[in-house]
Image (cartoon, rainbow over all chains, first blue to last red; front, top):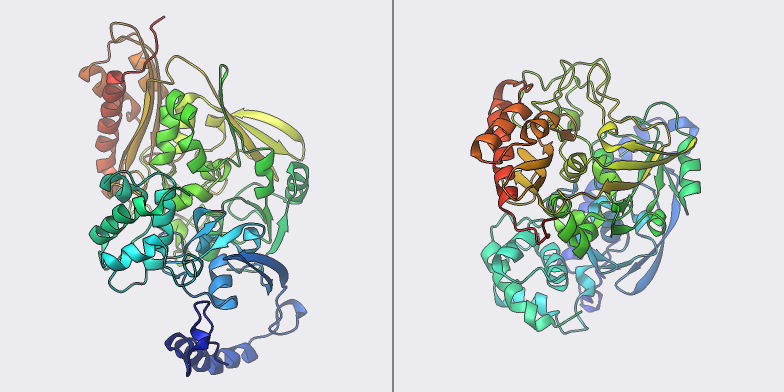
Length: 209
Length: 344
């Protein structure tokens, strides 16, 4: 099954989207060996095969409420990517070292990879998909494009979420301060000078809030 | 990550009740673990270093234990206060600069937004042999299995407080400031409330490196208190590291000084980080400085005294000299601070 809707309106396109093809294709390839391995493994502690305890988790993401049934181990990042199909938040290191999974929780920048989905209940989650106002990009998104503040783009959603918070916190007063308060977001392409430029430029355009 | 039961405690009583089910010492393998920011616990669960059967989410306790208060009697911090909020508090920055700086210089902005103070002081060593379970010898992870770090890559490991069974270092910053200030910790457990000296919270590895703290089963840190004193304003946290930001200390020093008008030390409070098995208070260096004019010779002598008992393990030897110089520089910088306090 291919799902096209990644929260950015790609479902309205005709034909499969690039992302839909990628996620669908990967799933199809993985299906055979995974189910074969599961069949060979004995059921643990008499539990029915493939059944793990699930818990009801309610998440509020980009202003929309979602009710999910999740394994307690599910991180917020996996809930967003695998269960809500919001693949803008990226899995880099998955250990809180790279910042690619940065999202806002109640307006604060935090790491979705080290947050259990269950522990994010009752908090408003904002991802890169929720930053634009309809077709109008957030000033920080626009500035990243204008300043060419990325190459491969993998770290970019995390950089942008972090940058928005950095400005709102009042930590974008100088290039040095921007560098210090953006140190939790790594960019292996080395786009750092352009990222600093983009943040410096977007800060006054963001106003207060 | 191994399967676990997730529970959410509505308040302190519920949290302690859930924790009371835990048996045995509060070590890496305690079957019940409290979850606040998750920045240490979730990481180590993913690495399979920690394998709790039950995770008790205590974030709701922020309502009763989230305070940040600077008063005449001293500093009071709730265990659920977040690192970023304490670091940004104007009164903390003014009256306890070493505390604000130790938090500001730690981790990344995202992690500082998440991490609670209680979890921060309990963060576990970054010793690579502890974090990577493919190394079978780690007395901290698996008591009696040996120590793969001794004779291994030791560059970042401890030179103070180690034993022949473990040379892991305590990696945190905030705890070093608490040690210097002679802070206390409020604990809540199945047997009720007790207050202990912060210096007694962490244990030296000795023959039981897997027991890292003196917390009793199910016991929960609910707050910290640091006494007021004429030294708190003239204080700073100096952190020396491989990268300028978002990096653990190779060596750090938390210093707080009370000087008379002539620059003679009435009182010195010194904590050392990065270099020791636990948050380290350098009592010998404090004693040496008392009554002495704080010049370069005195600062250098304090560094010598603080590291007199240091033991090198191969590649980490350079950090003895680095630690001495870090402390000396911190002392000299603190002596130059303009504190804005009227001399009594």
